[in-house]
Amino acid sequence: MINIIEEVKDAGSIGISGHVRPDGDCVGSCLGLYLYLKNVYPEKKIDIYLEHPGHSFAGIPALDDVKTTAPVGKVYDIFILLDTVPNRLGDFEELFNSAKKTINIDHHVSNKDGSGDVNYIVPGASSTGELIYNLTEKQFMDRDIATLLYMAVAHDTGVFRFSNTTADTMRCAADLIGYGFDFSDLLDKTFFEKTYLQNKVQGHVVIDSKLYFDGKLIVGVATGEFMNKYGATTDDFDGVVNQLLLTQGVLSAVFIYEKKPGVLKFSMRSKTDDVNVSSVSVSMGGGGHVRAAGFDYNGDLTEGMNKVIELIGKQINV
Image 1 (cartoon, rainbow, N blue to C red):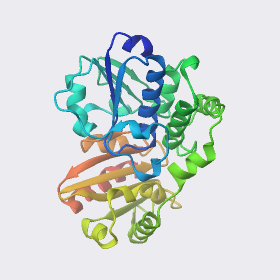
Image 2 (cartoon, one colour; image 1 turned 120 degrees about the vertical axis):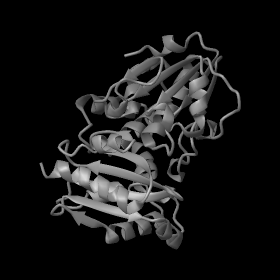
Image 3 (cartoon, rainbow, N blue to C red; image 1 turned 90 degrees about the horizontal axis):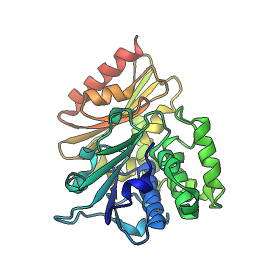
Image 4 (cartoon, rainbow, N blue to C red; image 1 turned 90 degrees about the vertical axis):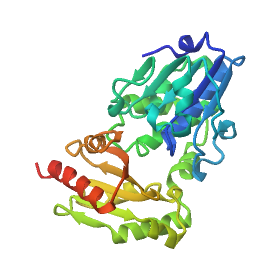
C-alpha cells in the first residue's frame, strides 16, 4: 500500500482522471480522491478530468468540479490515474504522459504491474473505490467523500452481489454508511433507475439475443441501424450486458454495440471464474476482470462476434 498523503505532499499541482465512459467505480473513486486530497491540502491546485458522466450521476457530490476537456500544454507535478491504464484515458492521456510524476491506483488484473511511477494495484480488490478507502485517514474524511466511495464500491460489486465482494468490502461499506448519507436513494438513482428509453432498448436487445453452447452463452447486439431506429446513444446501454447474464442457465454474456461508425464495443460478463472473460478481452486488445471485461473492435461485426464466441466456447466446453 502507498501513503497517498506523502506521495503528493511536495506537488503544487495535481491532476486526477479515469477511463473513458466512466462507470460508478471510476466516477466515485476519482471524485472521492479529489475531495479527500482537497481536505488534506486545501492550498494545492487539484483538478479532476473525466468524460462527462452519464445522467444517472446527476446530483452526486462535486460533479460540477469535473473538467471534461483537456488544457493544451498543461504539465502537472503529479497526475493520478484511477481504475485503468493510460491508453484508456481518451483525451486526457497526454496529461498523464507529460506529468512530472504519475500514480496509478487500480484493481484490474489486466493492469497487475501498474502503469505509473508509483503504483497501488490490488487485482483481488472489489473496486478502486475500496482501494481509495484503504488510503484515507479518518480525520480528513467527510460525508461527501463517503458517499462517493460507497457508490464506487457498490457499483463494481453489483451492489455486493458479485464474487469480488469480500468481508473487507462489507466492513468498508459499513464504515462509509456510518457517515449518514441516504445510501438507498443513492443506489436507486445511480444504479437501479433507468430511463424509459433504456428499458425499451434493453428489452429489444434481450428479445433479439441468441443462445450458444446449449444455452450457456448469450449474445446481444445493437447495430448502428438499431440505435438510429430507437434514437439510442451509447449512454442508453448501461446494464444491458448484466441483464443478459441473469438469464437462467447462462454462464457468460456478451453485448456488442456500435460505439461509432466502424468501431464496435464488446462488453462481456461471466457467472464463474471458469469462464475468464478478461483473457478473452486481453487477446482482443482490451482488459478487465475475470468476470467483467471489454474491448473496442475495429472490423466486421460477424467476424469479431464469431471470434469471441469461439474463445468463450473453448472455456465453456472444457
